Image (cartoon, rainbow, N blue to C red; front, side):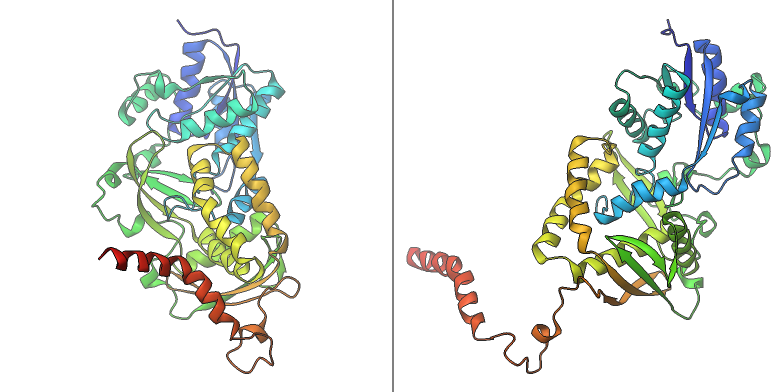
Length: 410
């Protein structure tokens, strides 16, 4: 027997899965359904989602659509890139970082509408169920969560389509007939592709799959330079034009996509235990990562950089596994943000056929690069090279002792 739910907020995209979920919630739980749809730069019109919700009997006052693009980049993407976060050495966490934002607004909508539950369309095999629910519980400890994919028997696309036909749920049959042989998830940071033909890790995806980037082979034959201005670790201007965070990322996506930058084909380890193959396009993020490391290279102390690099894999796993709102992620973020006080200046990059090359970096206020000391020419006594002998001997002491001991045992 289903637990009694009066009102539920559904994370609603207007697609097949969440439209079926909407009707299923009405029938199975006999509850009032409120839809929440977020614009995080997925590149789709959101009014069709409103219209479909209305056709399925949702009251106009129970349909919530919000433009979260600026909040997404400012409060989630930028803090993550201050840490240079990369999961398992390659993945820039484009899907992972969007889920806590959606969870936050699901909870806020639930509070606003006095709902007693939230619902999402993540499957029982993936990471997103964990991300949504950990975020929701962290912000609303008593919230009840309905995850239909863990309850129902509609475990294939054909069954979903039959359910939709049986219950009069509108389906975009043009999309159904064209149906891509994989599932996609898009936001302003990236597009991911998985499932279907990609479940064979040896299968090379067709060129037509990629949506954000041209093939590196077909990218322009002339390199393009881009200059990024940083303040406290965040990009504030592109080629001298001051832009909001979302507009920065949109412009870098445009530039990166034009030059074939940011494609990734990866077999990753899901938090739920299985290996999964995914393909990703993150053109703007790939530029951001390279540029951020460049501004840090000139403005951050060596040991601060080393500590950040030590902590980064743990920080990346926290985001990947859904712990954005955890006390340990917040603690790490405080340290990371403090390190960025001096990350101010300009980075110049060259974009060419899938590559991002740093060609210059400068900071008028916070550069730790001293040309007098670093020079191979006469430094007028800025650095006494004779000091190096004692430095080397002290650092070699433990190895010399070990070598003598080993020699005595032979």
